[in-house]
Length: 372
Image (tube, rainbow, N blue to C red; front, side):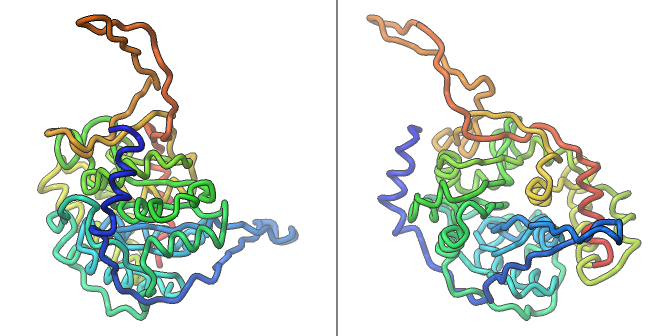
C-alpha cells in the first residue's frame, strides 16, 4: 500500500470509527527519582528518569510490563492509555486502574481510548489471558480514578507539554497512537522515541504471518510505522527467545509482597497455558521486554530495516514485511514485459530487534518485582 494511501483513507473515515471512552485519574506529577553512589562520601548522583507513556491492552504480560515500569527508577511513567486488544476497552481500563492501585501509583494519568480497531472488528484473547485479562486473578477494587481525557488526546497534550522528552511504549494494538497521529501529525518530531511490542520478521503467532498486536489493527500499524519518528520494533523475534520458565518462577516465589505475589500467580497461569498450548519451555515475556528495552536499550540488538504492514493479503494481513537489504529492483516496462534496470535504495524506518540478552533481562524483571 502506498505510504500516503492508508493515512488519507484513515483521515477520511476515522471519525466514524472512533468512540470516546470515559475515564478519571490524577495527572502525573513528575515522580523524578534519584539514587546515590555506593561511596557514602561521594555527592549524590541524580538519575534523570525517562518520561514514558505506556499504551496498553492489559493483558497478563501487559500487567507484568506495567509493574516493571512502575518499579524502575530509569522510567518516569507519565500515563497509561488503554487500547482494546487482549480484552475489551472497558475491561482494559478497569485492569489498568487496578494495577496502578496495586502499585500505589494513583499519581499517574490512566485514560481510556479507542473502543475498537480502525477498520475491523476487535478480536480479544481471553484464551491466553484469562476471562478478566489478568489470569483470572481478582485484584482489590482500585483506589485510582480514570482520567476523563480521551487517550489519544492525552498523548498529544503530554507530548506538547514535554517536547523531545516523551518515549511512547505501545504494547498493544496501535490504534490509539495512530489516532493521535491523525489528529496532530506535529507530534512526530516532538517524540523522543517509540518502542513498540509488536511485529515479527520470522512468522506470526496469530497465524503463519502476523503477530497479534499488529494483526489487531494493521492500518493503524502502517500509520505508526511510517510516521517518520525513531521507532524500535521489539517483536516475536526476540520475545520468543525471552522465556520465563519454572526456574525463574521458583526464584521469584521465594520473595513476597502484594505485587510480587500477584505476578507469581500470573506467571503460574502463563506457564500453564504454555504447557497446554505451546512448547512448554517457558512463557515469552513479550510486553515486559519492550519496557526492558526502554529501560536499557542494550538488552536488545537491532538492525535498520524498511518495514511495511500488509493489510490486504488473504493469508498475510497484519504481517510486518521487512526489507532486510533496504533495496528493491527497479522494473521498467518495455513493450509486453518489464526489464530490471537497476536497484533502488529504500530508507529504513524501523530499528528491528533481532537479538536479545534474555537472561540479563529476566533477572532485571525478577529483581524489580521481588518483594514488592
